[in-house]
Image: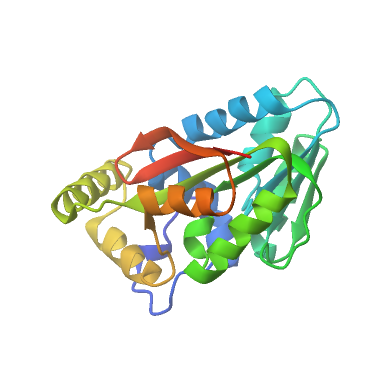
Length: 235
């Protein structure tokens, strides 16, 4: 369905509720530049490290796009697990997975409360930014401890720049992108206001420092466009 959530005035903060879940796929493709390329990057890097029967977690899996993409492109048997605290999002994910007859497990839970099994790959696209800073650092440590030796953590985030002027220019260009995707200026403004204090982005350095402080050996950017970046961290 088409994302028309912010066509009319919204008086509440942004939520991943049923209304959002129904239009989420349209929303994400029109809101995240090069979204399909990012899914492919997550898949391609994951497959470099995975062997038959390996376990992969997608934390904050929303409607399951990342794991579905990974399943379709893999030629080995994988244990794929998606976790999200939005029941509405997971209902969509399960329906999509069933439609393609894919063997993917989806769990409705808060990722901060989950005990993760040892896995080779953990993915989290555009999820950490919605977690409060203090809890975010604890989660990264949990992710580190849940990875097997030489495991990788792939994550994508909206970031802010330390240079305020350049940051504003990037945001303006991003708004132009959304206008080209069919959103109105009013919709863009309303969504930004609804996300205030809900989506809390870090700078590139803050993200990488958080990863290294958790114990990872390295953390590099594999993709970046304006205020969006995809990182890969290696244990």
